[in-house]
View (cartoon, rainbow, N blue to C red):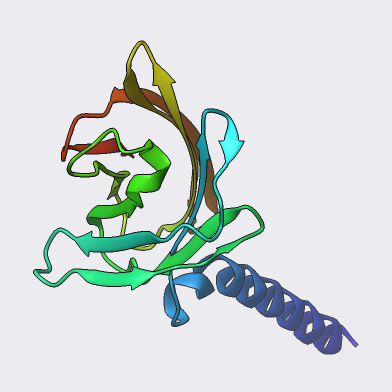
Length: 178
């Protein structure tokens, strides 16, 4: 009887340890994207027209090749997923059509995020709200970024805010990350 209780207890401890280990480390082992990005874009407080093309490029710091793609809007946001398996700097840039700026720029500015991922096992959820505002005769990009880094039983959330004045052909990237 004692031997049976001991074996049953040992099996329970092993199963609980296995479930904890799998739930903590499984996202690092499974294939798939680790950086999920949602971009909400508004102009003077109004949602952008989903018919207006937005051209995205993403780049990891240690790679020369840029991934170019066009994404469609769904649920009021532009969604994209990046592999994100390495720690380091990730640039996610995009350009709106010149119609959004009502012909104010000869060369349309580049908007985006510059994210520094501290640990390679982090799974990152980035929600970026960009409001393009016409103020005092110039365009301002008002950024609000909510991002969450999770992995190995940890989950930490951050909020970053930044306002940047847009200039002809310039880049306006909000920088964040550990």
